[in-house]
Structures are given as C-alpha cells and as structure tokens.
Image 1: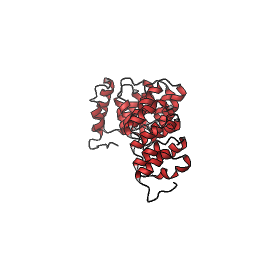
Image 2 (image 1 turned 180 degrees about the vertical axis):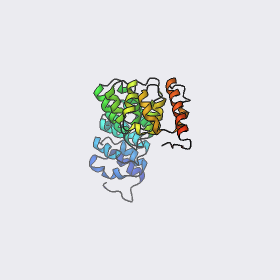
Image 3 (image 1 turned 45 degrees about the horizontal axis):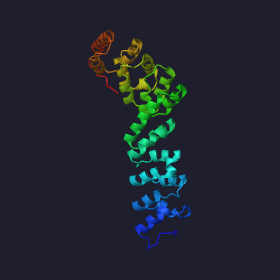
Length: 270
C-alpha cells in the first residue's frame, strides 16, 4: 500500500504504520492523525535518520514524542536525543532525563534554540553551571563567551580577569543581569574594576549608578561618573547603607554644590 485510498480507515493506517518496512513508510511522514503517528513512532523498522526526519515536524503531539524517545534507535542515538531536547513540544518528563547525556556545548545550543520552553532552558542553564565547576579554564572562558546571559552571570564568581573579560563581552549578558550581580557580597574587586573600564557597560546610566553604590568601585572612577548623573539619583543612592561614608559625604557635598551653581537645572536620567 503506497497511497492513502478511500478504503483506508484510521485503524488500517495505524496498523500499517506500526509495521511497515522502510521502503513503504514515506506516506506516514506527512500523516496528520495522532493515532497513526503514535503507531508509526513505534515502528521497529525505523532508523535514526527516519526519527530525525520525523522530529523536523514541529506539530508532533507530546505523546508521539514520548514514543519516539522510547524507540530503540532513539535510546542509542545521541543525535536523536539532542533533537528531542530541542523540539518545542517534547514533554519535560522526556527532556530532563536526557540532559545528563548531552555534551556541554550542545546544552548551550539548546539554550540558544528559540523554540525550547523557558522552564526547560532554566534547567539546562542550571545543568551547565554545575558542570562548569569541573571544566578546564579554557573551556570555561569559551563557555563565558558563548553561553546564555544567565550562564555568563553565573560564572562571574571569579577573580580570573580573562574569564571576567569573556563574561562582560558576552552578547547575551543583559543590563538587568549586571545590575543583579553588583550587590552580591561575594563579588570580587576584579569584577568591579573591569566593569568600570568596560566600554559597553559604563555607557549604561543604571550601571554607573550601581557602580557608585558598590563599595569596591575605585573612588577615582566614582568621580568620573558623577558629572553625567542626575542630582536626584545621586541623592537617592546616598541612602544606601552599603556606601562607604567618605563616598556618601563627598556625593552629598557634590550635589549641594551643583544645585547651588545651577538651581534650576534638573538633569534627566537615561
């Protein structure tokens, strides 16, 4: 049977899909009925390339994806496992056990796959960060360059300046993640120092404000940031108890002098 005819019932198609030899399977790759696809996914004659072709369909039901994951070819194929994890409709109960089989930078690819659900990406990022504790320095620097913003931020518990540079250059690292890093008590002076010198991040108004609030920021860099910041914002950050007393007093005096010199000026944040 090579084409669907009017006499083909759902049961007939499902029965054929479950046992068809490879040279008679072409019709089932375009099948729409879930019952038939479920049977097809169990077909023992399918090979790795057949499962990968089936996984190219983004409309597969989660039940079908579970059957593919249980197929004997999928159980021994790394490529099929990776394709299952990257499929947007693979159930978490299928995806999560597979993660331990995937290579580190394939996990990075999973994070960079737009269709992968956000909650799965979160677990993948946690898996990456746990593995990163045991990888060589060169691989860690490569990961810092290529990983997601959350992975990059998670690697920033370091004094290694080459690693810090790779993290700060990561194109996926966001301002929000940098701002979340700065208040951390385990932040190293090297991270703060390199942030204050990083061309991209010192252009950010909010990052400059946050750096002024950070006790580890060198005072000379604080002085460089002040002219471009609004007096209202400077006076507000002086309420932060973490700021060194000498920095707070200097900024308060600086704000008073600016207001006295130009009382009508109201600098804009940006």
